[in-house]
Length: 220
Image (cartoon, rainbow, N blue to C red; front, top):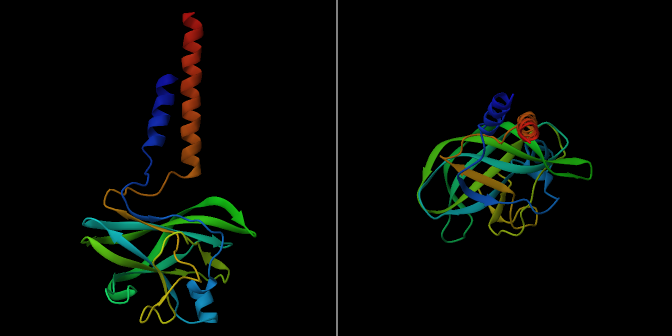
């Protein structure tokens, strides 16, 4: 039984986990701007994107990211962009990479706000090697649901917004200074364990503990 429990724990711990954070701007505010998803953009202001400035101290190869959202809908996908920072204006400059990435996992994050679930959502990026320097990550959430809000990270400066698909940019994101995003480099191995994996891991630890206690009683 002890060997089986140990195997259960080992299998659970070997579940993929996030590592290799190239940039992180944590969620701090339960509010956002509905304009930065496809449905709200088409009904309100057009082809809207939000962007977050980030700086790399060394060369990194990006392969994935997460964003925090307030949503009442199942996740869909994100349109993403990697842009160089304009050295004159400090806003997003030339477009380096772009694409669409499906949300491959999501999990509740920090409870809920006004009936909307706060989700942390992960997506893959094609491997992109960026030299040390300053860049922008542009995002547009693809969803058929109107009430989807990107999470804010107003403690960090460097947000920008575009209403024409990234052709031109202005400072700020919904009046705030940052969006809650994370970027991962090549040491990233996949999404965090799903709830079932965590349950299996906790159960395995419990089985190991129970078996050890039983052995102590027998020894006594």
